[in-house]
Image (cartoon, rainbow, N blue to C red):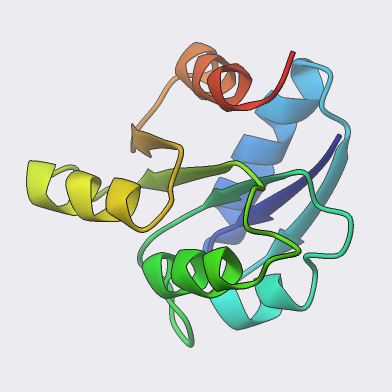
Length: 119
């Protein structure tokens, strides 16, 4: 399964990718903002994205890929420091399948990832 990890922090991308690799998800691609992520969507079967990023934030990225029929059903997990109920509800309304608030544990990350992917 090809996973796209989108975060403006290279350190956070490394942490997420290491946790994914440890859980057997070794086909990963990364991007540092929504614009770059859109250009890397080919073949992606799961998206993990931050909300706060320059150029194009995560929520705008989610809206953009949900409008594209080719990616409309790709599961999306938002990983962000924004944990207020209002923002969580907004992300879910825009098409995010699950939500993780930073900081998170590897177990939480993998649990949330597995909850959105088909068995």
